[in-house]
Image (cartoon, rainbow, N blue to C red; front, side):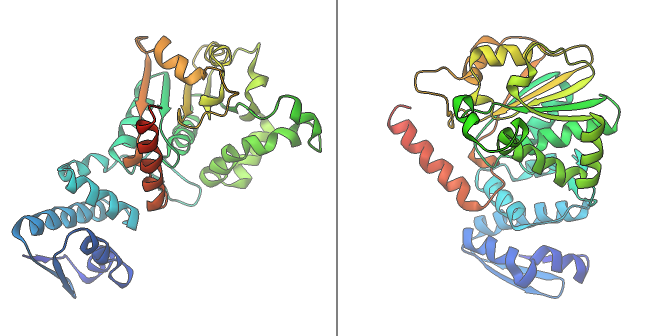
Length: 317
């Protein structure tokens, strides 16, 4: 089967640097792919040729919608086609959440992330639950920043439980802010990437953005705010209830966590696990579950998550 690409520029983006994308496809489907100028010839088993064609057409769809095409995008397309869902790739197009200060468009990269973003747009309280690398915290940040820019809220409040804190905090050097900053660093990093250091610092100075440990939320009422609770698997049920009942008028909340990474003392119930059963049927609250297929980090991260998941199932965990 022969595909004619629009022009050499599009062909270069499609093939990848040093034909990296073509090699990625050939590593999954044992077909022969010959590329020259703006032509691609695919030779092999008819069914596999059709699958590769589906992958390539999905890649072209991404490029022609104005998106960039990275190795991770190609790998995800391959997974969709293998699972018989290749045609659903168009669901990801035109789904920008926010534009970073560098001009990069933040978009969902997987169908699970797409469901997550849609839930964030429709519900006042959203739980994003999934393993490391699925983008649950970064997309929450991006959506909250978009709401701030659109003046849907007047401030962002970002919080995390400092699990190892307790008595150990007193032995750490510095004042209280110095002691808790390491626990909040991932939140800072995401905001730096989206807003840039200068804008973030100005917002922080003016109180438009607040980053604080979960313990600082007690006794407050948060009006007209987007409130994000990260690493929620490390809250207790009491802390989770305390956090969710802080919401005031015009406020929304995103709760993110990974139920396989609970660091609470043995025997303590996770507030995230508890919330899944207590709040499952409450209207206005959405639970979105991401899995290893939504991992957008190094390809080995997905395999690591699968390996640990298999052991957990085997042991009945």
